[in-house]
Length: 611
Ligand code: MSP
Image 1 (cartoon, rainbow, N blue to C red):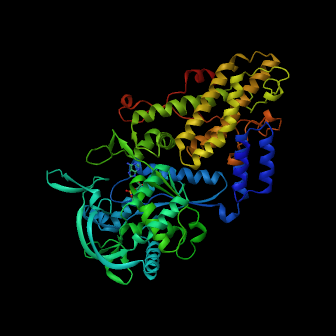
Image 2: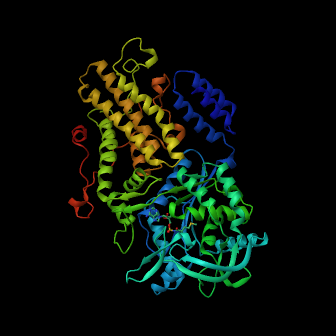
């Protein structure tokens, strides 16, 4: 373990002398634990990184404006928002961009069908996305629309660079095209089906969308020239595409045929897009146009490098090919750095089926976040969403999960430990090391039992465990670990029944205070770690504990320092005001007939303890 630990430190280009010496000391001493040391190192390194390397640039895909937002769109946005908030807490300068993808045949047709001019149509739907994101606390720092002037300039410049380097040529394209996916397909990707009137049609085997044969003279991009460079990039950067199964999938695709790509459409067919510079008869392919949005916001072509080299993308699995093959190939052709990471997620289904208007199973994210609260929806999506596999959305599941984990488990714990009946002075109580002696120094017996020491070990190790899962965007695993610890802390309180200790006996009082101190320290860890997931709930929790804003950062994740014999800044401090239960209990959907209901009080036990 020691060897691994030292190698982590040595391999890190920014490891400073302090970190090495300090970490070595920690690893050699029995306390704090190895995990705590690793966490300390990560946090310390963050602030030791030179300013320009502390930039972090995270993007969502830009959303098509042909239909209203659904829960899957919110999931992409919440995932990126979580990463942005997490990086800020770690001390990074993070920029976070989202927006709307407004050009292309699909949008042109949708605007026609709605009897609107394309720009007003786009503005209307783009505003709906913006409103949803604002309402769900998606804290983007820039919102881009591909119909903006700054974007047109960036796309034109990018095109000119590709052309001047000889990667674009005029040719004849003939093949299958799916307007719904705005994607070209190989014959092997196309199958037979019947439409609603029973007519034989061709569809994309992957998306199920209708495809059409297209034959046009347009501009082609020399994609075929990039196969080996893409393979080298992926093989040399095993974490470039995450999770691993998607990384493998891209490498697999690169084994297959990689023909040149058509990157324009005849203007007579597609008017709604950016014209090819110097050829007004052609419109730039919507995916080339859309992908460049990431550069536009970074400041391309004038001042992008500072942010561009810190780029990370969040994308759904359906658009992996565009992000992990076309996009890096375009960037290589333009001599620009490749993205650091492409975080891929799977899809939300409803009743086991893809959401679609015709099936009537589209879940409205705005309505659900009003019904289950914003943090409730954010928590559900990140707790239940497994990036590797599709997940099924179900209202009943939302209610059960939130009631169990936020109302009962976490909310119940906070309620118990801050109840005026147990803590009449409403302060962060004192820790007594005679009652809870450190394990190495059990000269005389305290009142803590083995399970209590196991709980301390688990909570002390938690930040490193959470960090590892947050970094790889396996958020559900991090939340699982946090929940396990919350249950252990509830078990600790339950085991020692502090409500039976307030009899006036001095030693009982010391032990009661110690139980509360330890529990509040656990809660402080949970609140701090949960901030990127449920910002409002975490803030409410930490404020109730009297934690100041500067003490909410990642750097303040030092757990139970009193146990290590150090001074604890919280001890004796007044708790923050009681602003009510942490998360109101939700009614089961059947009982409430689709309407939001007033909250019940928290658990029975908590109810007895309040007031
Ligand atoms: N406009 C393109 C992206 C261009 S990025 C340069 C696009 N737009 S989209 O609106 O169709 O999809 C946006 C995001 O929502 C994608 O990440 C997509 O995977 C995600 N989702 C769409 N439906 C989804 C689910 N049912 N479940 C989860 N996410 C899904 O593609």
